[in-house]
Image 1 (tube, one colour):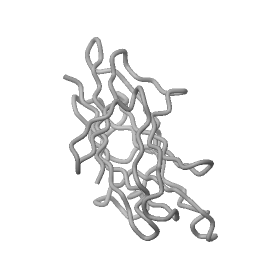
Image 2 (cartoon, helix red, strand yellow; image 1 turned 120 degrees about the horizontal axis):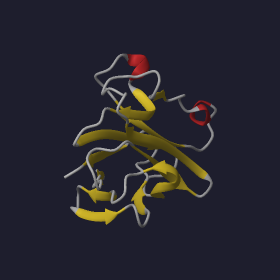
Image 3 (cartoon, one colour; image 1 turned 30 degrees about the vertical axis):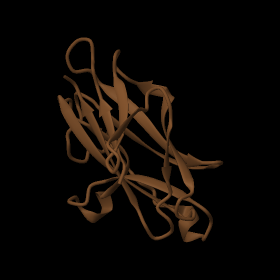
Length: 163
């Protein structure tokens, strides 16, 4: 299991933020958007959250990578999100689930997509792999994980935290 930790160190108080996390191999990719906004809640907000459209390539038998933000305790139609914007808080956590049609062990690049994001000054993106306890600065470099293989999933945990 790989754990992705997102640490937010804002210069002054809590600030809104958005971060796009992209998982890719060659031309195949998928992404999720996490964030915080003063008008959002930690539940489903039609104005801020985006339900995952599902994976059309998987249903058509084509190669795919899928990444979702999982809310297993929510209503079935809202359990898988593409975008999850939460209330402003000192600490937030998001659970990501990655599936793929690629063979087990195929390298997947996990990257923070800098363009189009609103990160407070001083925010640090940190990826931590639970199995090895290695930490990686995702804000500066992408990180490679192994595809879980068809029918399997890899879970990532994203934590946004301000000191």
